[in-house]
Length: 328
Image (cartoon, rainbow, N blue to C red; front, side, top):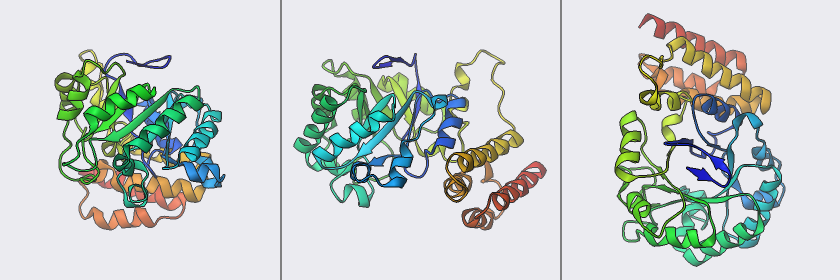
């Protein structure tokens, strides 16, 4: 698979762009453990144009995490074009257009998945952004607004005609949000369409090696994008690729190693962002990590994690969890 001049090889796994999740520390760890491509948190075009400092900070990327994409969202043509130009100055490998975010504060205002209710505007934004920048432009979207409007098969061709270089499809409608099961059937139809020649990336409910295998085998996608299953588990890419390793080459991480990785994530975020926001970002990962699900009455520990305000406090909770898990 290839985007622009970037060669990913066969069966690549991508980290999905997620607000308050895919900060720089998490991206770097996911890259280390086998993510073929990572994305920043999605960025508001309007906020970029207004030079909002917290939004501009999201454009910070490192050569260690490349290839890396920056994703923008908005509903105004001029703002999206100007934002794409600003993003290009940060030198990402890809500029991704978000036409899939389902949350009310985005889609309810006509941006993100809200664009699926205004296809002419969605296509105009895409065409104009592609014309305005030299960086490869890609799109991430959903099957449609709701089950009565499953438009992705036709939309994929229209987006390709606008000049995008890759399309990522989440196998749900906006109305579904993140409920129910992702439907990959239409993703497969798009990929099998003889008129489609750009790479198609599938997204939705990828959690196990079996899910990855099914996505490539049954639906023929060029890459798989992983979202919520990565929370607090940057090593998941290594685990999902284990079956591709020569016999005896894959060694699962120990509990100690995984806790060390989470502590490293905390340190990276504090160093590269600041202590307050670094903790804010990391504690959400820790509270969601599958590593701690076996701890008895973890709810109380989770609440303490989410309330921790210093590196020392959060590290102490992690060490406490380490001790409990070692005894289990």
